[in-house]
Image (cartoon, rainbow, N blue to C red; front, side):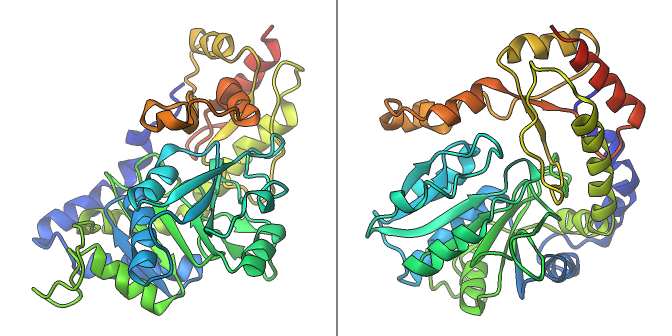
Length: 363
C-alpha cells in the first residue's frame, strides 16, 4: 500500500493540463486570475496572490512588511519549534530572528501557554503553522496579538479547507491572521502538478506590494519600484488547482473517514494518537511511538508505506548550527517518535482496517 499514490489522485485532471498546453498561454493569464479569485472566495479573503511555491509565499509576506516599515532586520518572529524548516527559512531569509516555542504534546501545535513569555520588545509577529492539517489558532493567540500589537501570520501549507472553531462564525485557516501562506506542492490536500503557492490577505496595500515583489518588483510593465524576485504561478498549475478546488471538500471528507477508522479502532498502549480535532483535514495522520523505527519497518514488511514528519527538528539542523545546543524536549520527542500513516482520499476502508490490524498486532 503506497503512502500516497499521486498518479491515481491526479489521473482525473490530466485533461486540464492538455487544455492549457493547447491554449498557447502559459503565464499571467486567465487561468491564474480565475484560480486566485476562486481560492480567495473559498478561503474567505479579499485577495489571493499566486506565487512560485509555499516558501516564496511566506518569504514575500515578511519582505512586504519590511518594505512597509512594519518590520526591520533583527525583529523577532515567534514560530513553533517543531515546524517544517520552510517556516523558519522565510524568517531568516529576511534577516529577522525566529524565536522557537515548544508545541503541546497532546495536539502537536504551538503551545499557546508558552508564547507570552517569549514576547520581547523586538517581537513583531507570531507565525502559526497548521501542522498535519490541524488548526493551530486559539483564542489565546488572537488575544496576544491584539495585546502586543503583533502581526498574525499563518503557514497554511498543510491545512487547505480546515476551519477554526475558535472563532464565530467559523472561518477557514488562511483567513484567520493578517496574511497567510499556502503551498500547493503535489502531496498537499490541494496539490499542483509541480511547485506552486499563494498568499491570502484582506490587506489591500499588502496584497498589491506582494504581487509587485513577486513580479521582479514591478507593478507596472518595465517599471521596477522594488528589488523583487521572479515568483509567479504558471497557467498550468493554476488550471489544475482550480479544477481540484471543486473537489477539495469531498477529498477532505474522505480523509476524515479514513482518520475516523484509525481514531476509533487503534487500541494498543505502544501507539499514541495525538488529540484529534473535528475540523482537521488530515493532510498527515501522525502517531507517536517510542519504537518508531521498528514500527515503520514492521509496516513496510507487511506492505504498508509510511513517512516521518520530520526526522530532524530545525534546531538540530546543520544550517542552524547556532541552535544545536538548544534543549527542546517536546519537539525532540515528536521528531523522535512521529510516524505518519497513509491517509488520503483514494484509500479504502478495507485498507485502513488492514493498517489498524497491523498496528494492534505490533509488539
